Figure 1 (spheres, rainbow, N blue to C red):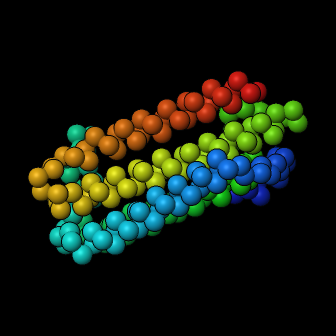
Figure 2 (tube, helix red, strand yellow):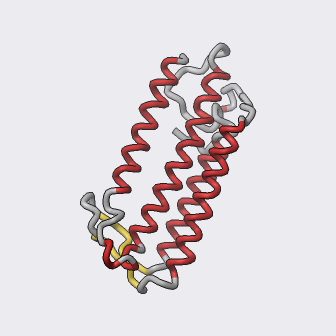
Length: 174
């Protein structure tokens, strides 16, 4: 959905969508989640063992191990993903590939819709990275083994559901 090379889409209309109070709230939530991601990485870094689980199978069991520096690597990847998605919400028609043909009559509605969707997507990404970081640090929660096993799947299902809802709304506003 993201197009990281906006100069390839010079022929697309450039619609600037003014941010509403809802958009500002969504961005504030995203920022809070991003700060939480880094806070978890910083707090857990000194508390986890030198080798931690860094990959999990579909049952939520660790099947890959690595250095605890992966906490910061994951926080960095999450930050990059959230920044790119957040920037795309300011240039929604130029930085995204949309499933709907953009016309003069629908460009404003589609820009508003995709801009809001990208902000919601950022919140889901922030939650996903928090859950993954907690899963990697789960050795600290010895009596709660498996606590975070189901959450990544739920977040991925919510991501897929959000894509479906966006697609249906975009088709409806065609």
